[in-house]
Image (cartoon, rainbow, N blue to C red; front, side, top):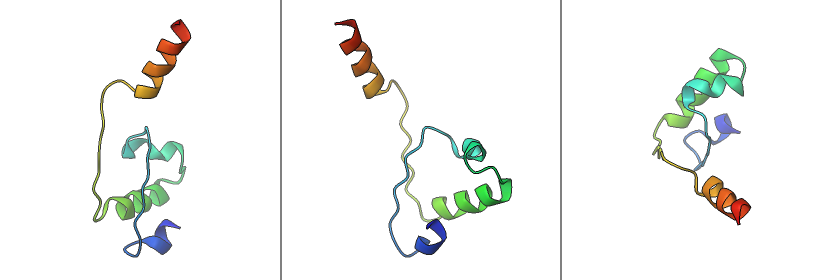
Length: 64
């Protein structure tokens, strides 16, 4: 899908893993490198840090 959509369509990917850790999902290192190369070419990468809203909400609901 990513190869087919490369430079043709928009794609949104969300992940808790840094690109360097994508080998956990895509075991082949060359495949992972090619995938990341296509994903980040022309990309707008948004990186969020800090506490997760979902975790914070779940913990506050659990304590009530």
